[in-house]
Image (cartoon, rainbow, N blue to C red; front, top):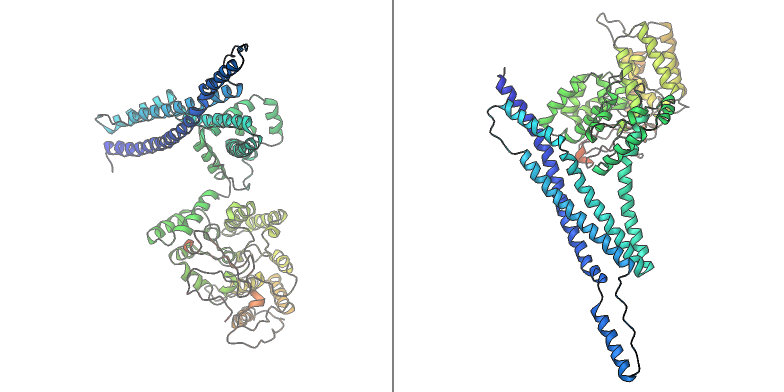
Length: 603
């Protein structure tokens, strides 16, 4: 146990580190600003040295004019010279100098304000002689509250805005100068400055538009909405525009009432958080309220982290501990984090599978592709771009997947009803078509015979690339061979009339579509396992024998396509990205970084 003083000291260290990081970020921003302000002031000064001369009479021109008058008087003594007009600079010269002088002044004021802010921050972080950690923590909080009370953070945010305003004014003066000199020069400068100013304006207003739109369309009841991103173009001026716009929109209650009636979260959208960080947290917590308990952003973070850091032995144990603590079925972890979609569809994965994959990915894949596991590991996967959690379809797929597993683990009449209803919802929303899969739920749901018949009949005929039917046959054969402690079959498909009819249906489809036809040992092994698993069923037609070829590959039958072989790669092999490049001329196995990975062939 800790003493009170130790607890105070620990708390003070954490708070002090937070304060130190904040002040460090401010100082780095100010240092960058001071460097730019110095360079910019030098550039403006160089222009002003020349433009300032335009406000004074050119002595050279005055001398030439006087000599002309003397020459004319010498030629004609009767010549009466006119009184010289007082010098008046042109309007454009006055305008350009005003703009550039103002630009220089704003740049210097910005630098001065930056220096003052650094002085204030230095005093804010100065150590004081406090007797206890509690006293040091109290002093820190007093200083922090005083910073907010006296708006020091606003001064720091104003400094870059002044410099940006100075740059904009300088550009206006530059355009004015180009206009007075030559039209072609003006056009060139206008295009270049317009592009820069347009980028500045767009990046200033995009955070406003993105934040208000996503907040307005976000609903607490919509637990399957798309992955929300945050606009990264955050700046003090963007924050000022956002706050000001929200204040104006709150003055339009009739617009808010109209949008609320149409289901938009108007008041959430026009109530800005305390700062950009609070806005980010509002997005981050938006999915933590859904009944599926699917923390999408945490899963996405783990997905990226395991890809990039799995090769570090020191971090693997932490990954195993974290993934084990998630309130998700292991199959959901294998799909959402480790990207084994096809495998999770056909096998009952456990936490030990997750840990084994983290320990040695290559060994895990070798183990899973042994025997008939090849069909399940390299079956067709959802045709959703990676990362799958960025896609609304992928997120819905994950949520349904997790929900189905929670129902299957406590199977009863009620959960079977809920399972049927959720699968119907899955079909109504068009997700089977969106993910380009015929079979879309795991082997625990084999009692849902009509749905599996519909999934099977979605295939038009012969074997396709990445054919799910072969994976289905392998999973079904494994399921039928399960035995209880008494040695009797555990599957109700073998003991019930509807189940036996379903097996006969699958058997006849195998023969009708010639799924048994392939000159390979692996396909023969699959058919042998199927025959052994179904030998207790009466009335099954014999499967024609196929000649076994010692070395052959199922290229035409089970080659990879764009949805096949969703097996992970190490980040080091693809430059930090999980990448799968199917080879349509070979076996559909993803190109691995490990050179010793055995080609996935039916040998």
